[in-house]
Structures are given as C-alpha cells and as structure tokens.
Length: 97
Image (tube, rainbow, N blue to C red; front, side, top):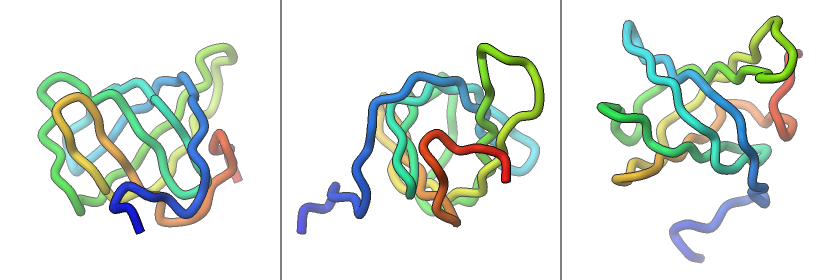
C-alpha cells in the first residue's frame, strides 16, 4: 500500500483553522478534508512535528458563532503543508456535536 494512501477519500476544501499546541497557536488554510483528517498549507514559523497532539479549531468564515474543535495528531510535516489525523471520525466538514 502507498505510504500516502488514506482510508477515506479527501475532498478539496477552503477554510481557516487555528492549530493549538500547548501555549502556541497558528492560523492556517485547509487544503483538503476527509472523515479521518485534513491537510493545511503550513503556516509561517510553524514548529509542529510528526506525532504531536494538537487541537484544530475550524471557523465558519461566513457565519460568526461557535467554532468546531477537533483533537488530532500531526501525521505529516512538509515544507509547504501539514497533515493531521483526527482522534475521532468527523463529518466533512467537521461540525459541532
């Protein structure tokens, strides 16, 4: 099996997400989503490493209000992108439960 293969299909998606790790935070742009994870363009000065645990805060850019918070693990770190694996399966896009 290809190392980049996913157990669910990824769909292109544009949204802003805040990535929280301990007392650090970065705002990033989503590139794609699936039920099991998401990809982001890597924010400037982002120091995340594979296997770190983070919280992803998904914002609705059209309608102000509550954000969707999802616990995740950093699955991929590349020069221009990041990949995350959710702890629990999510809808596409994630919604408040």
